[in-house]
Image 1 (cartoon, rainbow, N blue to C red):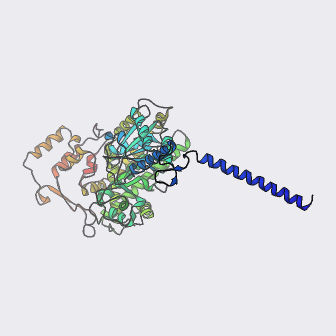
Image 2 (cartoon, one colour):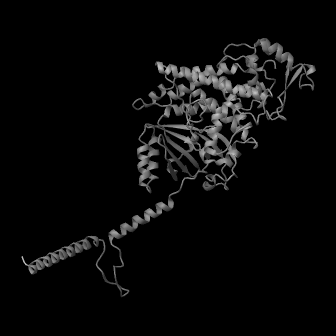
Image 3 (cartoon, rainbow, N blue to C red):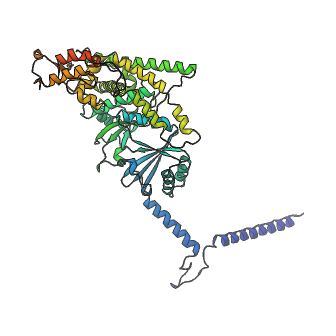
Length: 541
């Protein structure tokens, strides 16, 4: 084949390719332009598309308008939303939904016009429900919870309402549908608060320093939370006696929301014009050790030894301060080193001195409240948890209840009570210093205010003797202890910085203390649940 023939064939091939390309483009044009009418002359004397849109164009514009309307109506969840009673939830009035990314639990923050609440899909719903109820019995600040089982009509309403709220977000709708595929869901009261990792050093000082008058209550409640965690072996909060790093998200510092504080300021670590309420415990779980095998028994014994050792160190630090051997602000508290390091890691604030001392006092008060509450209450909480549902699904709830070993909790309870009885003077000092403000038992607190004599522990002779004394004209205490009354005064350390109470204004009649106290029975009482020896607690100084 000569050169000219080759050129002719190549030109023919190019022509064929051009024709095929043009045909392909024409076909694409026809397919892409099927929505539009043919161009024609319009009333305004210019060439262009017809003035009336086609049916497809109308549908497209309608869809865009609806999407824009959804975007305008879509509301962002406000972190400063107010609390909402769980019984007042109206599933037809949900306005905002936020998904908190969590590897273990699926958590949704939901708001309606009157407030906000939390929906939790817990991997361990039964231990969480039990832990929350037990904290409520101890009157420790914690959000209220409500169980929503799959057979409840409200469960179905919740699912439909949340799906309707995610029309603007396909991904969120997918997450909701996957998360709701559980037989039991917890509704939790929303707490407007800041977690430890978002608080910052300046606000941490405002929240945890005893230089501020309202900090002591928060610190003491942190101690009470620690005491409850010890009882339940909850290692997912503070790294004290457990070999864990702790969980900064399970302790909240509630804020007082007002018009001046919005989400941006709440998340700004340098903004300090925030008023704090209390420290709040969330996601509390009981983690019992199964002693049915050899490894479980060894683990339980090891844990009890750690509990005993920790309580001993707590009281050792306390005795060092109240004895006057060390200053409350300069002493290095051995029992609180892990906690101080934990707080500094996530806040940059070095908690020390009186703040740590307040936490120690809170732990002691917390152990006292647990002892005062008794095991009977714990058993009732377990019974309530077991009967919280009417119908189980594939033994999910019953299997969860079986993980709560009341025998293990009994051992921890006994260990805590035995250790507490070893330090009656130190316990008395702590309770008197805080005027029993954090004692849970109201009857105990009210009667203790009247001379620290608890009537329900007295026999008939003791009650009669106390009544005679009350009606013998002793209305107020004299100024001197020489007249038969003893005045209690807290040790003054470095100008009185060992306690806020200073001089205690209550008086104890010597006759009552010396004659009635020995008659206090040691038998178990129905109200308190456990043996009490008030002479050991409130005996001679």
